[in-house]
Image 1 (cartoon, rainbow, N blue to C red):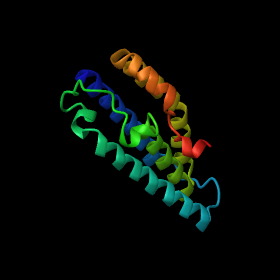
Image 2: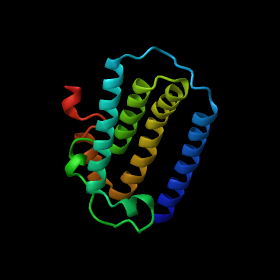
Image 3: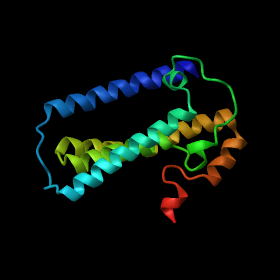
Length: 156
């Protein structure tokens, strides 16, 4: 599991490097005129995305998440933020990129958001296959009762 996590993080860093290179080299063409309203909403989404990320790392060990320390073979985590949604890190990334686009409506930010949206189902599928293999029926039950990305309070 530790090698998987290190490999995953290396791939993620490589992918992020490509996105950052694109951001630096692509012209920052404005795709729509933002207003103070879109900027405030964008900043709020980014703030909330950061808040979600903080809640995640109040529950998870950062060193285990990064693969720097062996993952504990403990129980399935279903408390704190994980009682409301199964993939809070993906939610935080989605909020951050959406907020960034509203704050700075440029072509690179739009492409980053679209790539993120396209990646989410793939990332969720791969992660859930790993979790099902590891936790079995416990994860299947959790999966049936807890939404993937958006908390039930937002869906109702």
